[in-house]
Length: 406
Image (cartoon, rainbow, N blue to C red; front, side, top):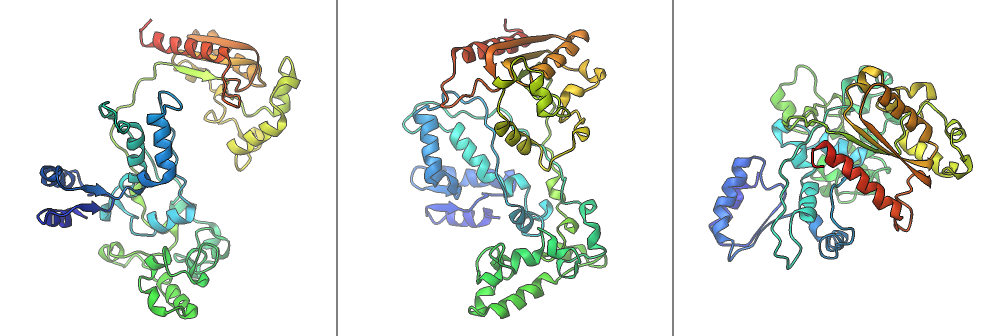
């Protein structure tokens, strides 16, 4: 991608800033490094990972590394909320839709995220003599779940293109909705920039004539292919009007080889284990129902965890309600340490699960924090009670025992 240009510029003695990603193969990256390393003392080489220069990220890094605002960081849960229409535009219909003609999804979409995490967690703070902290291994797995042919709505019939599809008016992924209408800054809004400029690169030549530009965009969206179209033709261009589930986003089925680690044990803090029970049943099972979390909070939790809502009878899947797992699976569990709260509406189902483990001869320890309700270790304004540190220490002791460190 950028390899040949960088190699040519390196001979001219210029400072270089390269767009991300640097290269799409390890060989090209290594070759660029070997060429530029001798110039490091006098020339600047950088990659356009712009997230490092966002004011909020610069402040966050200062808080983490210089001010030590939250102490030692043991793990990070990072989510990049890619808009559904952005995802379909760039990674299903667009330039980065297929690994064999572009690059892996972790490189094309997530290189910014990987870089910012390394910058936050691995690079030493400014002025520090601490060495870089590099991860010992990186593992990533994923699978193609949504953009499958089996997801094509029945109402779409035999349509392969949005412009001829009966289901188009109600479809979130409609190319007309994304590129033509006003919902997502389509051409009818007068937008001549991204993403319209990707569909129609010469859109600026229409000089503000929205009707003419709209007609040209619709003409591009009408382009389609069928079983007789040569593969090299299909791979040579983007098909922005084609059904998203009929594209070829096979590149999203990826696995970075890694052996599965053996699970030494499970630490569970007040876990929800049975979603087939309604909240009132759970409250009634508590010694003092009036001290449990109010419905204003639990209703919000339920809506967040289960959207769209599922009937109670449909919540028996053990991935949702692990407390309902059969004995055969219980027998395969490693040692379990549970920390529960006296006034938690989940206490009864958690104790029931612990009793099942004990009856199966499994190693299980149960701690009940007296006088406390659910999530007692996370009260605002983040001023933990002494019992929090004590229970955390006990849980850490359980983990150490599983590794034979006690």
